[in-house]
Length: 120
Image (cartoon, rainbow, N blue to C red; front, top):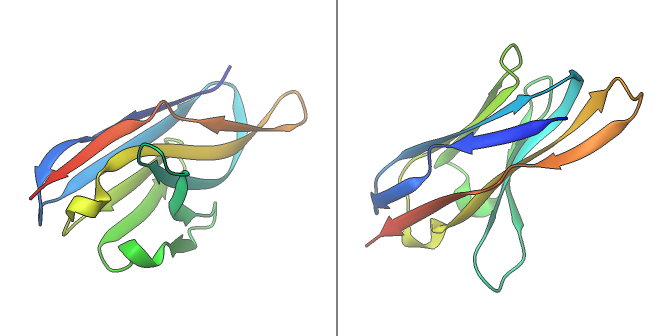
């Protein structure tokens, strides 16, 4: 089995910073692009940032210049450094990736979610 375990969420004042981590564990042969999504109650889950296995990145317009996604392939871990946080960044943040297992197939996995709350 594969697990994605997130950490690093919490409560921070506007203008502050947080760093999220998501570690994948299990019998993983390969990991595809790793992504962070966020969701507020009653709304769809939106892509925040993504990083390919080669390190290429892309961001939602709302977080460009403030958030940085990175990954450590040796640790099967993806990070999201969030700076200059705004109240509208408040959401549950989820990591997501596809992993290649010894089943010979790619499988899609999600983390359990971590709450980020930005106060004014």
